[in-house]
Length: 68
Image (tube, rainbow, N blue to C red):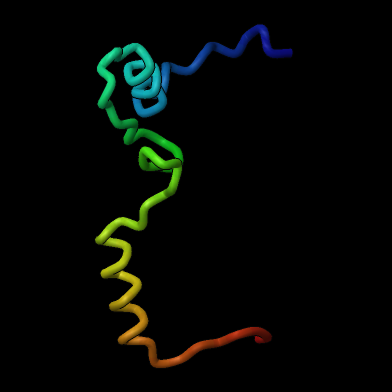
């Protein structure tokens, strides 16, 4: 059933992981797809996310908790 399907080209974004793994520099940071963690294994909250959350909190005018 699948013998006539041709392979799609490699995804360039996912290919970044291969490049990251091949890089032997000790202080490299993987900013590809996934969850970012610091050296202690914690996922830091980015400053931009904190600012966006604060903006939303300060400008919230309604909250629908459940139902229609």
